[in-house]
Image 1 (cartoon, rainbow, N blue to C red):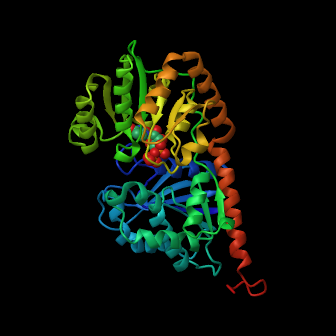
Image 2 (cartoon, helix red, strand yellow):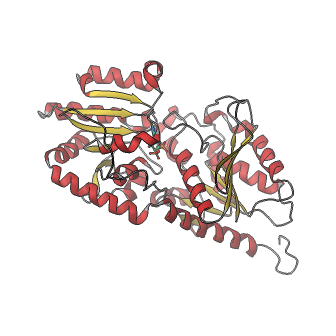
Image 3 (cartoon, rainbow, N blue to C red):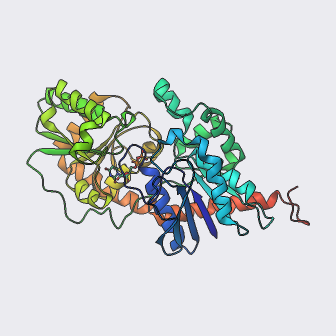
Length: 418
Ligand code: UDP
């Protein structure tokens, strides 16, 4: 197939760990590469956010990235990008010319709008372009948890469900998302489930590990935004200390890069102040952004990875930890309910509960053989279920269903829409 992906804010070529660059970037990059490896031709369209970017970049065999002019060629927060989606759609349709792809796959709700618009404008061959949509995150969930702090445009509350109802097929990344999509009015028959994956060659249990002191070491990894719950991990350090366990170091990975960047990063400053207030400042190390290539060595050097988000649409970090044979202590929310198996590959705790987090960490740190056992099982689980090859195969099935849905809506004699 000739596949177009639209990922308006999350370029597969971006550095990871900033406020708007995380799992979606990884997902689009790795899924595209895995689909290309299966023989498809994949073009990812993303917004030009710097004047220096070339128009087209070959990202691999049969896989290219196209930077489309849509709004100013500068960094713009993703929640301010809605006004530029029509321009993005026009740019994509213009690039297709008279040869539209076999399918367009939108990532995030705004790219869904651009995909539907490009598909409508770009039916050069007369055959409708099927639209597949992955939301990555849902505004309804975000609003429930973030309330007034949610900076999404108001239009998201009606445009996102409309994308869900209009696209030919929706790919949910976990079972929790299926319930949320149904609650938005998306028919269950239109939803496929294909999770995110993990690079099993890069993230391995064997290989170099970061050197460490004799202290226990735990880590949080991700974009440094409040909903990732890093503050809960810091509060858990205080709980551990109160329980007599103070030789624990917490690495906080993500956020701005370099010490200068961290000094002005609002979330980094909030976390630093909290650690000082709780008397655990000497146990918290803010590492800032770490390139993905260095992540496996970092993960191999920790006793456990803590994922304590308020909510989590999927969460690739637990897969990366499990792939490195590291146990995960995870809030039982969203995708983490599917990926982490309590007592088998890690421990689940209730969300927003630092005492429960501390309890789970204390258990793992006191029982290294249990931690090793969970880590080994984690590796087995990701190898069995979460390779990008497998995710690409699941995605391909969803693409076939989308094409079948479009075919079924065509007049069998004339080949025209009924
Ligand atoms: N990441 C990274 N460097 C950082 C912080 C994060 O490479 O400094 C990567 C991390 O390894 C993972 C991704 O960014 O691959 C985060 O994905 P996840 O799904 O966990 O969170 P999201 O960003 O989608 O909320």
